[in-house]
Length: 86
Image (cartoon, rainbow, N blue to C red; front, side):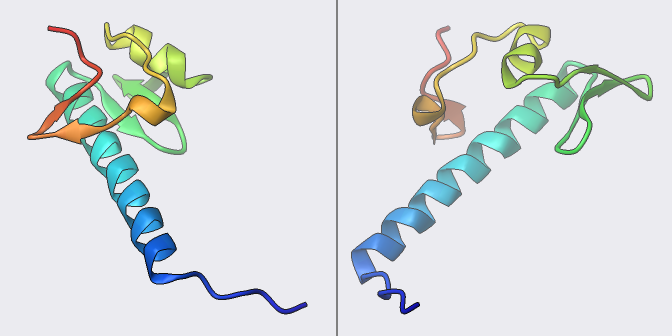
């Protein structure tokens, strides 16, 4: 089956989406470290060598004391999440 190649605009959109997700994940991992946790993709939120959250994304946010934003709102601008209410 022949697949049509993506256009330049589609490639830019997908690259920006991936960068946004990567930025958010890096911010969340840094935030977890600042609170004494480690965030591992395969295990969840780790404290003292044991998983304390990670069954759901929401459980990770709750354990870190954060609101759980919708995935489409997880954007980082100037090193800060746009969804985080201060």
